[in-house]
Amino acid sequence: MVRNLVYRFNIVFVFTGILSQVVFAGGSDNQYQECPKQRGEFCIELYDPVCAVKDTGIRCIKAPCPATENVTFANSCKACSDVKVSGYESGACSDQADDKKHGESDSGK
Image 1 (cartoon, rainbow, N blue to C red):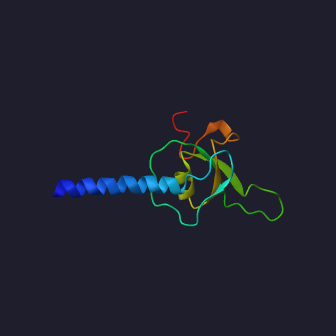
Image 2: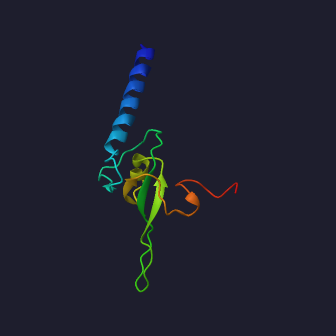
Image 3: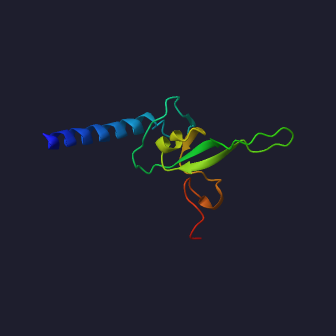
């Protein structure tokens, strides 16, 4: 009985993870995709890099300053899980300094 419940839980967990990834899969090509209003609670570990547009929180009055930045995330689900991300394009960001990915630190360099 317990083994059957564990098996069912695993099936539901995996199905929910796949469904979550499908919701955030967006289109192919390098077309900009907006993140959905309803954000996912968890994502599967799938490496399919996207270049996300993330709000920096910087607001200037006089001088032009970057209100957004491009950040590479492992996949669209992880990108859209960040509430500061408004959307993404397929593929890693080409203009990121030192090819740094989201979540990596400078430790060890």
